[in-house]
Length: 448
Ligand SMILES: *[C@@H]1O[C@H](CO)[C@@H](O)[C@H](O)[C@H]1NC(C)=O
Ligand SMILES: *[C@@H]1O[C@H](CO)[C@@H](O)[C@H](O)[C@H]1NC(C)=O
Ligand SMILES: *[C@@H]1O[C@H](CO)[C@@H](O)[C@H](O)[C@H]1NC(C)=O
Ligand SMILES: *[C@@H]1O[C@H](CO)[C@@H](O)[C@H](O)[C@H]1NC(C)=O
Ligand SMILES: *[C@@H]1O[C@H](CO)[C@@H](O)[C@H](O)[C@H]1NC(C)=O
Ligand SMILES: *[C@@H]1O[C@H](CO)[C@@H](O)[C@H](O)[C@H]1NC(C)=O
Image 1 (cartoon, rainbow, N blue to C red):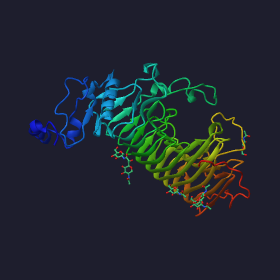
Image 2 (cartoon, rainbow, N blue to C red):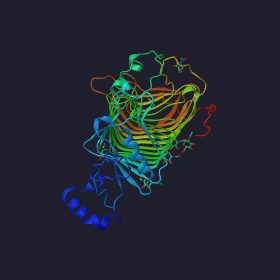
Image 3 (cartoon, rainbow, N blue to C red):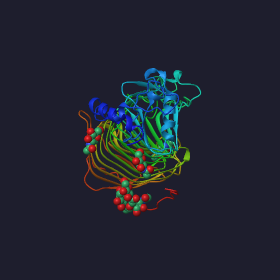
Image 4 (cartoon, protein in one colour):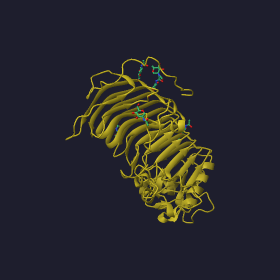
């Protein structure tokens, strides 16, 4: 029992037990530590047994969906971040909070729970986006160690007006000269560690829904991510330079990759994800502009990919260096997927990239128990490895992919791909090269 209890303890116990639901202590109280707190802030602030709760309404947030609540979020964050005791920043149910592009900065003195029960919305499109704030990101968590974002609330990026910008690729089929087209990532974790994101629903991001870069120890669970199938570049979860990542038990439907894994990621575990419509789960694109890219120890398992352009994909540009290695795709069900299994080392957005002599080296990739249907516009399995640097040790077992109803059979495609079928696959992949390349080219995998 802490300070105020001697006087208020009785009152508190009665109100709590009689009127509040079981989780009422956390969600129904607020604390006003800031001089700018709204005068109607409820008291008692908390019972002293649980962690303090910083309700953004007590910091002046209005929550009518129109008022700008940015300052209240910042004040609540700063208070929670400076507190000695670990606490909860609460976005309460029953309100819609509009917040501008904001950076929640650490390091904080302790870990923080960001509890989202209400709705958080972005400004409505580029014209409402303040000119002084970054058009590349909306909510950023920077240099935080120990943050848990959770709740049953909704984060809505209101991306529609961004998707319709004339610079977006769907307005320029085949024309690469459409210039930069910045749109904000909804939620970015940057240079942070020990981050958990759980339960929330994130929708309609102007660009990627989540981006983790330069992070360690990331755990994502029970998320729902939702955007229209035709929303451009709305990857569900993108990670880069991030390691020790778990992405579990989530539903993602969007207009681009469901999960995308960029350069510098290792120890990534993806389990029980349902993707679709989407562009599937992708490692890459890697090696753009001759860059060095490494990605390893990646497992994708027990997942469903439906109505998607790709299933499990590794994509690299010509000219990169580095390696993708130790990747396992297992126990995946494909439901009408255009390219269920694909390695594309000729990834190119403009259709006129030149072939080069270096390439990201792809090896030790295993595909097991991958079953379902494909939509025959291209081969169900496509291993298009680089001319100069073959893929090695691709292994397939229990792969059974059949054409969706009314479609014709299509043959697998291989180019410079070494590997083995450990069990007979459907369709059989007779185009894999056996053994190892006689002369493995010089591959530059420094730092991988
Ligand atoms: C990670 O964060 C959680 C809460 O978000 C905290 O309980 C735990 O102690 C943190 N672990 C480390 C190693 O910082
Ligand atoms: C898989 O994830 C879904 C949510 O997408 C959840 O309902 C289900 O319980 C999870 N399955 C397991 C075995 O954890
Ligand atoms: C391959 O990756 C898995 C995680 O998917 C990891 O457990 C295993 O240790 C890695 N193997 C090697 C040889 O690094
Ligand atoms: C690059 O190499 C691939 C495989 O040899 C070939 O199919 C493709 O036409 C080449 N592309 C260019 C632009 O030369
Ligand atoms: C492939 O895996 C084997 C066995 O784990 C390992 O010895 C080898 O170094 C790996 N190859 C690459 C290029 O990582
Ligand atoms: C091939 O890769 C698998 C993992 O996918 C690994 O267990 C095996 O040791 C590798 N074999 C060689 C010869 O590197």
